[in-house]
Length: 229
Length: 186
Image 1 (tube, rainbow over the protein chains, first blue to last red):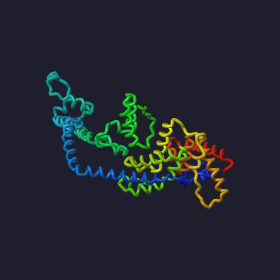
Image 2 (image 1 turned 180 degrees about the vertical axis):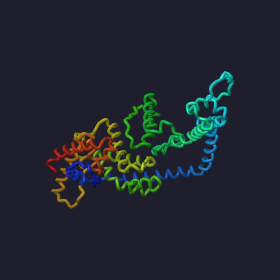
Image 3 (image 1 turned 135 degrees about the vertical axis):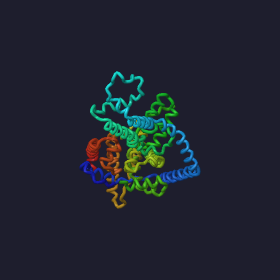
Image 4 (image 1 turned 30 degrees about the vertical axis):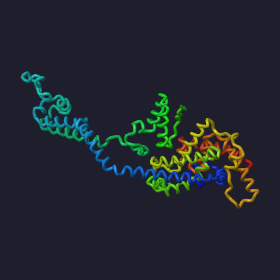
């Protein structure tokens, strides 16, 4: 076996390497056929399952779209981002009215209406008051408020684009079906769930989960040992 | 960059059976040699060898082309071996090796050797095989991955999930030990 060039090579192990090179193993007859046959059959199974899915695929796509539309649309209307946009629009419309802009800088006079009689605009007052210098005139305040509200309107869009929904970058979970339990999303949480099942003495379920785990992550070493039932 | 092996594996995932045959042909000897030298029991080695390849087939969709195929393959093999050791509840030791199992491990490659050379090499390999089993598991594993799987120290470190310095140290101790045991035959 040839070694790739390796600056970390252990020195003076060429004599030992030679001994291994001279070894030749004899793979028992029949193993090759068994393994290659299994590899071909796995592909056939794959093809068969895909063919079963194909005629259903357009209907499934339509059904999925309808379900998503029904479920997601109401959520979007009531989502915090949407609510924020509504708030910002309210602020913007109020900011364009002179009375609202002047309110933070006005000196209270005895002739003013009582506080509880004024139209409620507490958010606007709180947000604009620290931003306005005492000597700023109304137009400057108006521009400043507009800029603030514009940037506030843009903020939710930017943040949702940059953070977005959690993206599963681990392609090893790609073969799991979309309705898999959440604990299967990472090896760690999956193993935790198996350990939990063992502690609860649900050994059959633990074994099933473990088998699925090994199938999904064959190269992931675990120290879980499921007790015999 | 995706290696040749990785491309073959991806081709197999997409349905190319011939790609798997190529991959199998490339790695079967090294893998069998690794498994056999690790468990030193021909019947068990055959089962484990088969298990490893069946896991490769079954888990083909989870293969990530960014990682080298042989590292993935030998990591699966290592896990199968560890499971085997756990089931056995023991680690194979030198006293469990009998003459039959030794004779199964070693075949001589060159038909051009004289009978004297064959006798010498047989003795040497028998000694090598026995010497391997005097090593701690981690050292034997490092030696087998290095000299049978042909892996670099960095690759071994990834497979056994440790640092390169640790791997170098294990190899150094193993080589010193093997050399002292094989002093008369090297």
